[in-house]
Amino acid sequence: MGNFVRTQKSFANGEVSINFFENDDIQGLAYMENFDVCAGGGLRRRPGLKKSAKLVADARIISFSVSETEEYVLAIMNGRIRIYANDAFVQDVLTPWASSDIPKLQYAQRFGTMIFVHPDYAPRILYRENGTFKLKNFAFSKSTDTENSQMPFMRFEGTEDITITVTYSGGVTHFIASEDFWTPQDVGGHLYAIGKSWLINSYVSATDVIVVCNGSYTLPNDPVSDWQEAVFSTRRGWPAAVTFHQDRLVFGGTKSCPGGIWMSHVGDHRNFDLGSGLDNEAIFFTLLSDRRQEVCTLVSSDNLQILTSEGEWAVSNKPLTPESVNIKMHTSIGSVAERYLAPQQIEGKTVFVAKNKREIRQLCLDDFGENYNANNLCAFAEHLMTNPVDISYNKNAKKLFVIMSDGNMSVLNYDTALGISAWGRYTTDGEFKSVTTCDGKTFAVVKRGDEFFLERFDDTEFIDNGDYEYTARAYGLPLLTSGHNAKYIRITKVTVRVYNTKTLLINDERVVLPNEIYDDDSPGFSGDASINVLGTNADLVDAPWKISTADSLPLQILSVTIYGRYQI
Image 1 (spheres, rainbow, N blue to C red):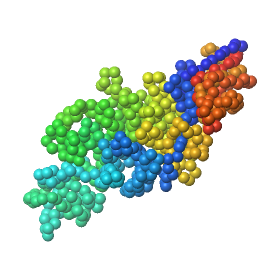
Image 2: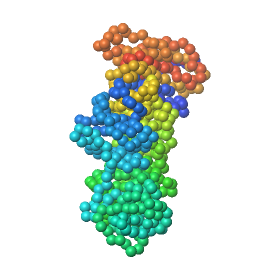
Image 3: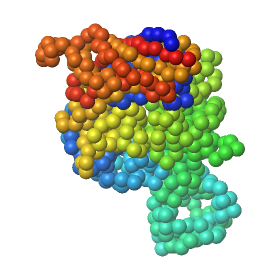
Image 4: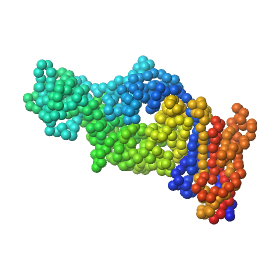
């Protein structure tokens, strides 16, 4: 039998899965709940949640920065957006989106406006005017000479053999298709033919629609074969993804053209007319590969990154012009298509949820700046990824928050400069439903019983929502002693070095701390706290020590030392 002393001074790898329990190089934990890893590698009890507002229903929250001094949290719910600032309700804005639509809603902000897109709805713009928030339809511009709409048009697959006969009688223009083609969904859509853009005003039959245009036109003598449909319409679908890149508004993916990318004129974000291909004019291309590419989201980073259901693409041209579109698929991880999980910018890299919903991937360029890699940020802790439904990064706290469908939250403490990449879990008396970061603060929608609350993490709080205690737990990794295959290990003593601490349980045994630390003006106890342990850990899979607390008091751990004997 031999004696041993083992000190763990860093928990920089956070909770790791059982697959890595026998890896001596990992500075991690077998379990971490409601703890954060500090800059030095120690552990600190997570901040409590302070109630900002009671919500009328479940909501998805996003941040909206109107100016340096105006920061808002938007709570998007069935048929409305409720707007909050500084924990106070500001205004209700009515929307066309039902609860079932909200998961696929995407958005992009530029200055004081935000554009929302959804594959089943025309884009909307949220803006603030004279102190009031308003939501309006996104409107494509019109050319000054012809008054044609400058929305994008294209010829869809399957329409190549259809011709249109243009007739005019009784002050009404009809487009007569050569075969059954029109549907009631076409009403309100646009066409481009005989040098004009047309609005479909009414449906007559599968071969006949009534159309109108601005200005006069010359009635053609023969059927028209050179005609196009608007890319975006009720029938063909609306943009699924949106961003701004190099002063262009970029739309991505529709139901009829899932791999399409449309870019506006430079500085003219409502103009998508391809024109003659001048450098500042609109751009259109389709992602082509041996697999069907569905655009999931767009990211404006060092390059325009296009995340699809099958892989990660990038357009690297600087500046980007119609004549220079260098598009390349770099990796084949794929993103979640059925809901919008906004990619996050972390230390200059794009972090996204993989298609399999078990990985958080990080897009980063290689040393030559030519090719992207998609590193797995949760390779050691994939067991904590169970169907993510929302994600947000707080760069001030250096934490990535990921909410799961079961209502729990996985949190990554991430600082590459300090070598910290630590996943853990946050739990509360309720379910986390949505998360966002606004003005350096992280907000969450929490369901408690049958009620929903907007709450935010606050370092001064040690309780959730003013009423709910939460337990913080950290369990040590199973012990490998001197590389031997021990038959059993006897732990005789556990010593925990703490800082500014007022509560501590080791192996469920409360440690007695000096009475004077509980004065309001005392920061807490700093030093070593120990318990003597009797017993044998026979299977070597159980945690050699457990630290916990359910008290609403501060707890910070610097290191854990265990003393014991082993037999081989």
